[in-house]
Length: 337
Image (cartoon, rainbow, N blue to C red; front, side):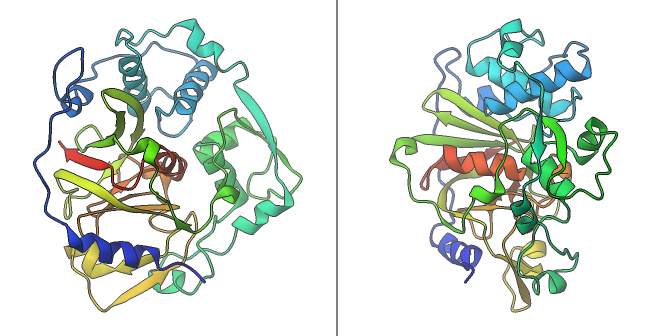
């Protein structure tokens, strides 16, 4: 039986919806609030690296929990922000120059993935309408290409580019695919359920910069991770203020309710959408003490930083899985612009 996870979290979120005054967290270097320092301008230009060198740096940043966005060999906005945040976290000069030792951490830029028979367990029929999605047993990947691209944090077109002699539309178990040598996101390791509070991370704080579109995780005064996000929408922007994490659910059931999505108010017209990587909230729901608002995954990683998210904070599934392992129920979440 699927967990009615999202419904439960939404009910819990009604108990304490009022934000409290945001406390200052001062860094030793600047004596400024951590959120203010974290959101400082990032006017850094990257050198004109070739594709393989860019991929190697993207992999290094990604493996270090400073997400550069999807791996594609391009030096885009989130790539630049991830590099500067990594340098800030490690007391390095905030320039676009990169020391050779960073590249040395990724001795092999690419690796191969041979598709196992069990990969087919995570691929299945898809649907675009909630009424049709609610009838499926799970919202799985639509193809093995989609599974592989998400597993290796990549754009599907980039995976195709790496495999010019392979028909990516007819992949099957036993086929071997060239992929970036990044720590893989393993959908098979996820299980439906709730995360328990982690005492080791009890003092961690999350900051959501809605202007620069990234989520930062602090341990005291130390920045430990950063990931690109989509923060809310024009209709329902992410709520500014200080909140806290009420619950963390893996592979949730999503209540598709147009009343909530459009107006932030529950209605009696809804569909329960089954778990899976193509669920609208992806593989994770992290509910806040603000009704109907949370940090979650996505069914379309290509749109992170671009498309709207109805008041919530949306990340790629591979980043959502890591955020879950870096925070705890009860952590504060400061949303600002």
